[in-house]
Image (cartoon, rainbow, N blue to C red; front, side, top):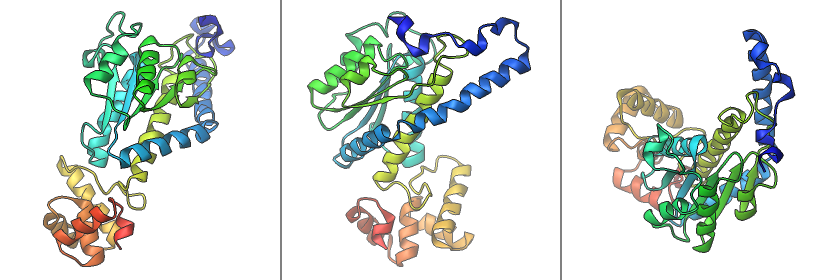
Length: 294
């Protein structure tokens, strides 16, 4: 079956890769990489459906769960672990699962991606429910770990989304929303950590970022819910408050302290001239959307 997959075909531009000069190869590789964003663009209607599904689930306390094997699993994990510091999500709200467990992030676990048992097992361990959304990621679109995971997710009534780089993929046939970004053959035959990996990363960026916008985690284009885990982020939070309210640095510093290091609440306090308690209450009623409080 592999010879029928776009991701496994040979790229005509690099048939003599081992004889190409470095500059020549890098120019070809760059030309191929330039195609990825345009290929992702073609899938925006499907990506939009996926975002709507995720937003609907998260508004009802459901979770976004990525699952994949190898590079695909690592990309999902990367997106998941960046959500708490960027959007102040609970670590359990956006979850990344990789075939073989967390140790597989660093070193491949033999046979894990070929298992039809591990996918459902991993979802059972995190107590998957019908409120959740599972995003299955597989460049080939035929990874058993992901196939079985999506099938199990469907069986419990969860939302299901697939991300692959082949049309008519197996996971696309299972998922309720199929995202299939066809970038053409890789410059190094079958090395889907390249264009396919880039495409998957771009799509995951879109899914998580657009979904967080959809549940009130931003104001304008400011990440007002970031976690202040280091000095750089404390200073960034002050700049965000200044940009959102047109206040001075000293005022931003003062209100960030009054808001117990929560930029979003500080912004509402300044814009509406209310106390910490009132600002928090208004935000809760507005489901986290600053614009709805002012």
